[in-house]
Image 1 (cartoon, rainbow, N blue to C red):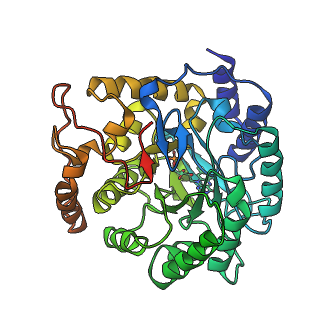
Image 2 (cartoon, rainbow, N blue to C red):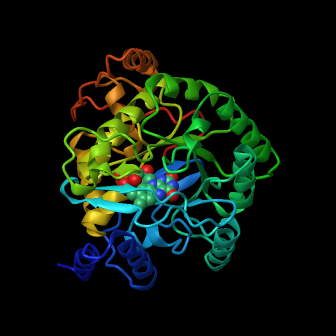
Image 3 (tube, protein in one colour):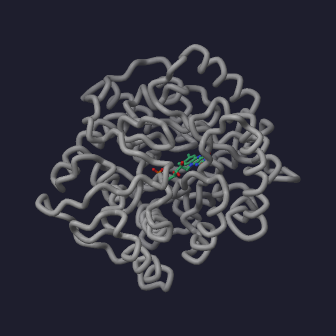
Length: 404
Ligand SMILES: Cc1cc2nc3c(=O)[nH]c(=O)nc-3n(C[C@H](O)[C@H](O)[C@H](O)COP(=O)(O)O)c2cc1C
């Protein structure tokens, strides 16, 4: 048992929010044993950024960018600071984070507690000037204040403020703990948001890619409409998904009825289904980050085969500690090799292709899957390719994604 395992076990005895604050402080101060370096087959280039391994840290772990090196310290491939709101705000009253131990899940209703854009940008400016070429990409996840009178304007201003500090910007329109926020995923609100982001994007000489982070509770028609709406917008990818307000049958833990967003394994089936449908509906042309209940190499690999180019972790790290990162990194390389893939990019979306089918031939197949899913009959998963019939590389996503 390493001292990181002992620390993880001790932290689990503290109240959840206290444990989280302590974990973040420790992470910034105490070096962790580094997992083995990722196999070269796991490396990818997306949006011009190099990812040595596809596994990253999900938003919410380091909301205020207190430890921008968190991903590197944990041996992950990328980080995502935030959600940060334009002005500081305290979030909801405590307690607002609950462990569902039996399910290895969490419910949180933090409500965007944030030090605010200026404090976070200031920290990241200092960090960037001290690390001229940080080893891992760092995304910044932006939100809006609970009392915002013009969220579209605030998102655009947030994007402009962090643009020079972020390798990508995640626009969070999916937290369940800010009333009305999820309305920005659809209809007129979405169109206004996209216009505001496009204007802010066009004003910059060099702008980082913008990703939208969506809720698992979006329905299939809503997802299809969103994908249509972002066609002409500068949206470079989707993060699927945030926490859910649903309470799947079978939860037994004492805190299962707490209000807030549920994360961890009970979220996994819906997060996977949304990701699979998004890949099919976009013909695999839009890079996707899969998140929600990933707690093993097998779960991460399933997300990659369903269409994720990258995956993120949060809740499983709370229960398993840093040891999980090495297990996933080694396991992913093993699973790729077992399926006969020479690189991770070849495995992205493999479920949508018949064995031996090229990614660019798969559009018709993907559309069939998408139609089936949108009509409620569920996405059909193609058979896994064998080592003798390897699905060739996924087409580089229309100029936005290329293979390492
Ligand atoms: C305590 C907690 C706080 C979170 N805060 C944020 C946040 O500020 N912004 C965000 O986009 N997602 C936030 N999330 C959602 C995670 O980034 C992730 O999408 C979700 O937890 C599903 O992944 P998981 O099952 O691996 O935890 C938070 C999740 C948890 C558990």
